[in-house]
Each structure stands twice: as structure tokens, then as C-alpha cells.
Length: 175
Ligand SMILES: [Zn+2]
Ligand SMILES: [Zn+2]
Image 1: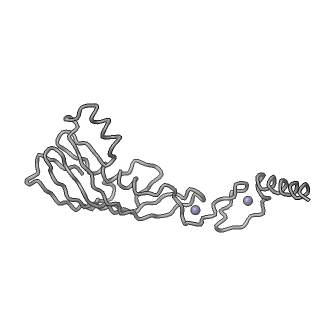
Image 2: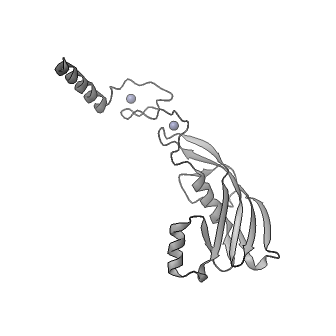
Image 3: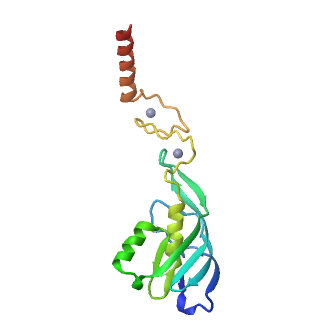
């Protein structure tokens, strides 16, 4: 979905959009949309700049960083982004903007790409560490079983055995 700025009748526009199946792809193999997302926003024209504030609602399927199992997450990021026309900025100004404010976007040809905004908001809303649950035990590094569901009989890892040896040595020398 695009907003065509030449078609704005007022300096303000309210949009509520529920995507249809297949209308929006995330272009990211790691994140799958479970259902079409929704977006609602208010767009305001502020001179040459366009401010868009609103909220995205999406349910995505991702994979746990520790046990690799798929799980679902609901994300509802609120956003407030200021768009400037790409042409009016000098290269120096662009550099300053990217360094100063990540909530700044650009538009070209009097159009704002709402799909790109929604995709970015979903991605930014994901936590840095994706865990199926806070205390996920992950996979055994040796046999690969999911330690959330199974107990394996692998020997402790090499690091753990070295730690035990050092502990023994320390005790023998310490007495
Ligand atoms: Zn997990
Ligand atoms: Zn194991």
C-alpha cells in the first residue's frame, strides 16, 4: 500500500488497513507472518515533511535461538516517523539525519510506501534474543536432543570436565 501525497485532500489523513492474505511479504526467511497484519495511522503534512504515527499489529512465527523450535509472537509496535522528500536534502544533511535519528524516513515521487514502514516496524519490534520461553534449556551440544523435552546421558562437556579437574587440583594443592 502506498499513500499518494498528491491525492491528499487535507493536511491530515486517517487510515486503517487490514492486509489481505499474500498482500504483504516480509522478505525475510526467518520471520513468517501467521496472519495478515493490520496497520492504522494518522498522516499529517507539516510543510514538506510528512509525519506518520500509528500502530502495527502482527502475529509472526519465528525460531528460538536456543532450541530452534518455531513459536509465535504477537507484536504491536507503535511508531512515529517523520518523512522528508528525498530530493531536498543535501548529502551532508542525509548523513546527519541517519546518524541522529533513525525514526526518519524519506519519500520520493510524492508517494510513501506504507508496506516498507510496516515491514520495518515488525522487524524492529522483535526482541534481540528470540526465546520460546525465558528458561528454554536449548539443545544438548553433543547429541542434539531438545533438553526442554528429553533428558540425555551425554557426558558433561569438555569445559565442565576441565573445570572439575582444576577444582580437584586446587583442592589437593590447597591442603
Ligand atoms: Zn527454545
Ligand atoms: Zn546429549
